Image (cartoon, rainbow over all chains, first blue to last red; front, side):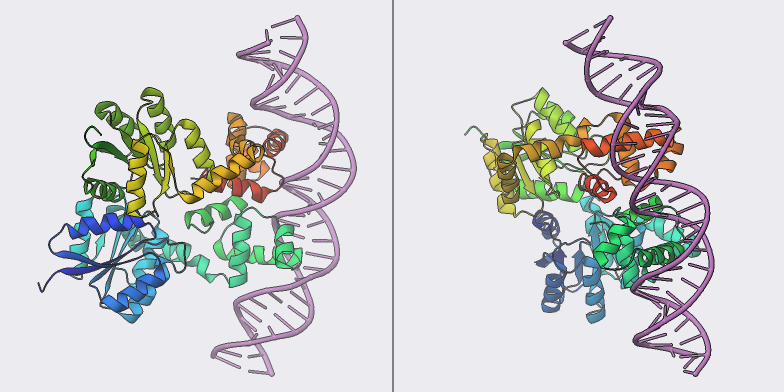
Length: 218
Length: 218
DNA sequence: ATCGGGTTAGGCAATTCTACCCATGCGGTG
DNA sequence: CACCGCATGGGTAGAATTGCCTAACCCGAT
């Protein structure tokens, strides 16, 4: 082992950030070399510092999200390992992040020792997943059809369809959507039909559920 | 000043918990004497330790929420000061918690120094609010009608109405709700009308928004 | 015992949504 | 070019929702 593991912490919550920093700096072999409060900053700092690991929160309201930041970092610097530290126990996020090249996925409800274990594992090029994530992954492996279709279906929507999908889930009526988008109610109906078919949904409450489970509302 | 400020940290995220603990223990005059991962544990530990301050997260999924825990603690031990540390910048939470007797309200996105300042302020019986909270409070003071009515309105709903309200927000149709609750569609319509009137809502999307902003869905 | 709130339910007319069908124009691809 | 996906819109018929009114029953409080 050549020196300490150099880590960047990216999280929009300053207190979480400094808590993680303190925790990791208490480890002799780990050093937090920078912090970032949003996705853009995470990328900048990563390019500057060339760390071993970036610990990344998914939901960072200001600017770029953790998802996009992870993608950019892995494209620009594939040797930097990204460890996701989040509140969200959503299979959707998990799958997307693993595809983007994240090396670990751990919840904020994990123990200190688990976070440290995750950092060591990821720094060695291993993958660290918390138990529920591992379970999701196994299920995704066992039911590739269901997962592949269900979780990726949303991306098959066109931009306009996504826009209308969100408005439907938020409870706007066809008429209200038509007025907002300056199009005919008939057009909204057509889009709605196409959306429902693409996502294999039939009821409005399924739309809400779908959006809710993916954090698409707010 | 007689000795150090004794603090209990209640948060369902272990990493946040231990981060705050480390941060506060680094202060010579502050001592974290216990941790809790849900509302019930917060109450038990508070009764055991009789701390000066309980730092409380609002949303703790397992068991009792921070709201109920705050209420119980302030009823049983009014001399214990509760400092709310949360992600939610919602006036609704702020007002309710202040009414329940919380002494401070600070966001997880605050700086370490702000959290420490808050702990000192609250330990002296002062009130510490982050800037946005202070703004909400001033607005609430300036517009007592709007705030008092709007933010407390949900509690005026009967149990049955709350039940139906949630189902509406989740996107179920009147017919679906009627079938689920084994009542007539007409009854659902009546409840819906009463709910909308009580909450001063007219459109379905306002219902969704209302429920969403209060974390009533899931 | 009267009053009010909560839950239940119906009637009727107007509006909206759904479920089918269809068509046009545009841009990219085989 | 022919085809396909996308965004736009229309017609029609029937289902569902909304708005407004009424009303029964129960239960707890004044």
